[in-house]
Length: 210
Image (cartoon, rainbow, N blue to C red):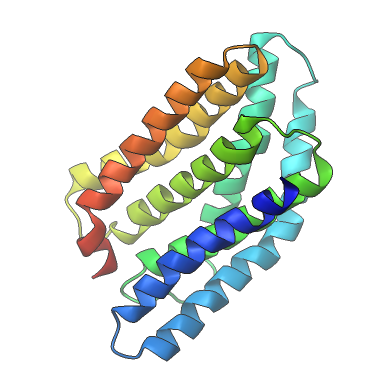
């Protein structure tokens, strides 16, 4: 189970980055540039995990709804994506930025998820499947919103940003429900969030990779 958490995000990222590189004229050079961004995000994930752990300690461990929601939202979802977004101002990005943004955010998410596997003893379905999937969805939507800032309709950008912020908040809700005995409802909310994220990505796929 721990191995799954370690490899799941890199495997998904590998499929996407290979596709993004294959559609460019200079595939080899593009592949190297994308994987360098993934590596940058992965390196950033090590110090980022300190802040994730710090965020989990802000709200004390409790089964009361509000403290539990705050702790799980911050530590599992919101802090990793905010650190990733802050890192996007570092370095020079090409015009087709979606793949580069996603590579960096996915690298960070991969390391944070792997560290969770090493340090947390939770083997629930939420930890094994929903957390990696929701982190990938948040990374993809955040990358989409950032890449379309200068060339998309404001409504599209607003939807991407709104959904990008909603994924961590809804992720915290799924964690809270899963931890308080509402596992079925947690998976329904998580699945709905992933479907919404996927629909927006599919609709803007070609424009994002252009």
